[in-house]
Length: 307
Image (cartoon, rainbow, N blue to C red; front, side, top):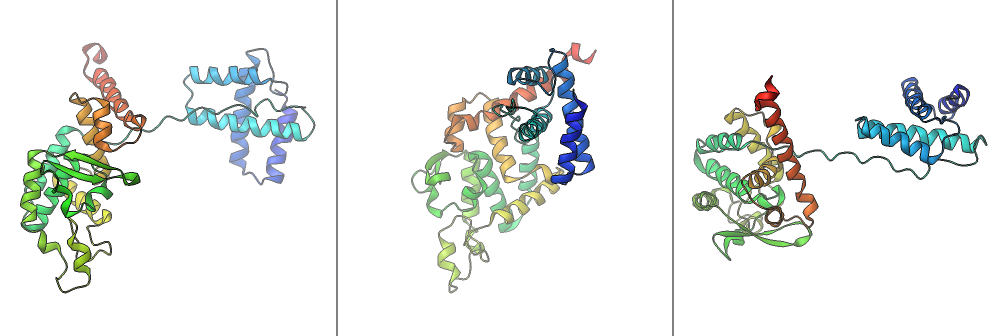
C-alpha cells in the first residue's frame, strides 16, 4: 500500500469534507485491510484492477466478514479511487462498477406457542366489556394473522358473507377471505353483545361514522379503535401475562401466526394467501425463522452439542 496516496486521501477528507478524526481512522483501517488482502494476491492498493478488488471482497465473504463491514470497506475503496481519478493519479476507477454485498434481512420477531398461550390465559381473566373486546381482538389477530390496520378497521359486515370467514381488505385494496377458528367466532359473538358500549352516543355526529365498524371508538376521529390504542392494550396484557411488553405487539402476533402455521405443517402458498402477501418471497422470511429455531434447538439440545 502506498502510504502517500492514503495520506493524501485522508488529508482531502479532513480539509474538504470536514471528516471527523474517528471517521478518518475508520477509512485508514478499511484501506489498510484491503491493501493487506490485495498484497496476498500479488496486487497493490494504488494499482489494483476491478478483478483484484472483486477477488478480495469475495474472500471477505468467505472469511465470514459481516455484510455491513464489507459494505463500509467498499465505500472507503470507492471514495479512495474516485480521489485518485480526480487527482490524475489513475486514469480509471476500478471500484466504480462494483456492487456492495446484500445485507441479510433481519428475521421477524415472534413469540413461541407457549408464550401465546400465556397471553390468551391472561386475556381470559379480563372482565367487563373491555375484556370481551380485548379477547375478540386477540383471537382475530392470531387466528387470521391480520395486519393491525386491517384488524382495527374491520367493518361490522366483515362476517356477513360467511360466518366462518371474514372478508379483509388489505394493501392495494385487495380483498381476501380469512377462515376463523371456533374460538375466534365465539369471542367475537360474545363481544358483539357489548359492542354498543364502545359506540358514541346515538345523537352525536360521530355515531354514524363509528357505527359501521366492528370495533368502534367513541373518541377516535377515524370512528374505530386506533392502532396506537390497541398496541397499548396489548402491552398491558403482556405485563399481566408476565411477558416483556417490548416483545409483544400486533405485528409480532402476525409473525407468530405465520411461523406457527409453517411449524405445524402448513405450506408456504397457503400462508402467503392468508397473510395477503402479493409476493411469496415476502412470506419466505418465515422459513428462515424456522431454520434459525432448528439450529438453536440442535445447538442447545443435541447430546453431542452439550459435550
